[in-house]
Image (tube, rainbow, N blue to C red; front, side, top):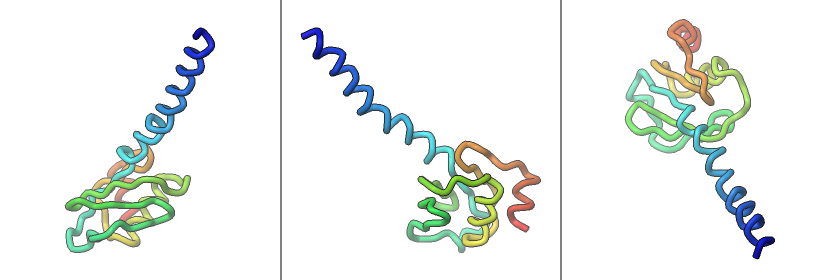
Length: 102
């Protein structure tokens, strides 16, 4: 019985780890589009990130490892100007958004 308890605890830890590791990425990667007419009706993949929109707010899962300003420029090139942008936990400032939308 003593040997089973540590093994059971280890199994529970491994089962919970992926959910904990994946939870922040979708919440930390989002964009608000300036133009409602440019909002995609289906999920859109940009640089490996799967963007899904509800209203003018889109969230993404996955995606290439790249700086947030570059990711913003790539999204704006496909979906139009953005008013807010966060990429894997990094939120762009007003100045960075202006460069992104240029």
